[in-house]
Amino acid sequence: MTNLIEIRRDLHQIPEVGFKEFKTQAYLLNFIAQLPQEHMQVVTWRTGIVVAIEGTNPTKQIGWRTDMDALPVFEETALDFQSQHTGFMHACGHDCHMAIALGLVESFAKNRPTQNVVIYFQPAEEGPGGAEPMLEWLRLEQPQLVADEIYALHIAPEYPVGTVATKPGLLFANTSELFIDLKGVGGHAAFPHKTRDMTVAAANLIVQLQTIISRNVNPMDSAVITIGKMTSGTVQNVIAENARLEGTIRTLNVEAMAEVKRRIEAICTGIEAAFECSVMIYYGSMYYEVNNDERCAQALLCFASDFDGAVSYECPAAMTGEDFGYFIKDIPGAMFWAGANCEFGLHHAKIAPDEALIPFNQKFVEAFIRTL
Ligand SMILES: CC(=O)N[C@@H](CCC[C@H](N)C(=O)O)C(=O)O
Image 1 (cartoon, rainbow, N blue to C red):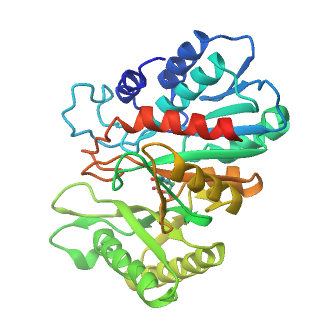
Image 2: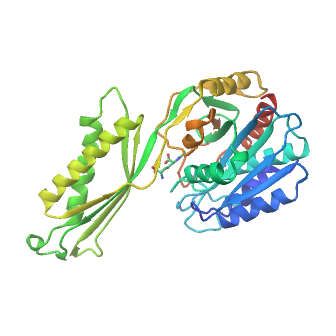
Image 3: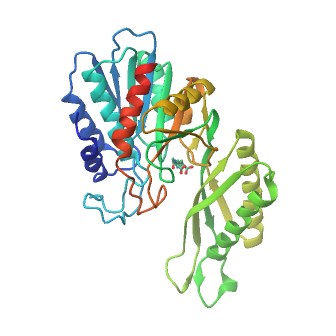
């Protein structure tokens, strides 16, 4: 077996954002090309890859999905294999996910499973979303590669290695990206009355947006609005003509998402009146919730409870988003958190997952799939 930790370290050095995973795709294809090809079909879609391995006595087709993309985060781990792409980092563990998936391809290519297995290397999970268009392409162009049942994992820094944490039903939230552009009147810092200052308008808007969570969403429900990036103005002594907010909305159901958006629009109309400016809202990509199939999630938990070194944990839902939700909207399946035992959380510039999670989960998932 190949050393999957080495593979992860190679991938860690070449982080690429959504639909730009060119070097990543080339690396993966090169690895796959060196495996026995007799019972394998490899198809590419944009920067993604689908690998199908013919089972020895199949009655169904099992899918495994990994994401591939990285984030525009400046790495601060000081690891000796840190990112060679300055300003970009595998800060969400997709390098680990890919190493595990490659390990599965290798194992199944060398020792075929009973069922057909299809491994999806899916681009653009962090944005703008690769799962939905990849599935659309599969259904139209390669329907024989659509799984009957599908699984995936995501690393979880807060759990020890070996933890398999999931739950039947809702695991991850509905998401929508949020971009808001404000346009006012710029001018000299000393004459605010002759301008319409968009730094002040944007600051007010951010505070008012948070009242949607505290005053509009039912306290027994949950929602998140995070503005992760704010830009305004050009220099310290010029009043800003423009400001831009970039964020994300998370809700536990589709109806709450519609309500949150209705309130965002109303507040933006209020900001336009209050600050005599124009406000444009643009919702970027939206992800459907990750709603685990009851039987598939229980199967994972049950298998983990007997697997050497695994700890099976029925965890609460989280406000993370994952476009894997589109895969299991119509196909029975489940996702689980795989313990990664590290101090810093997902999307942090210092995240350094315990690499022991990689061989452990490769073995766990391989064994699980072989039971299906
Ligand atoms: C697992 C994870 O961290 N996923 C991302 C998905 C982001 C979707 C989209 N770009 C958005 O921000 O709404 C997450 O931030 O939860």
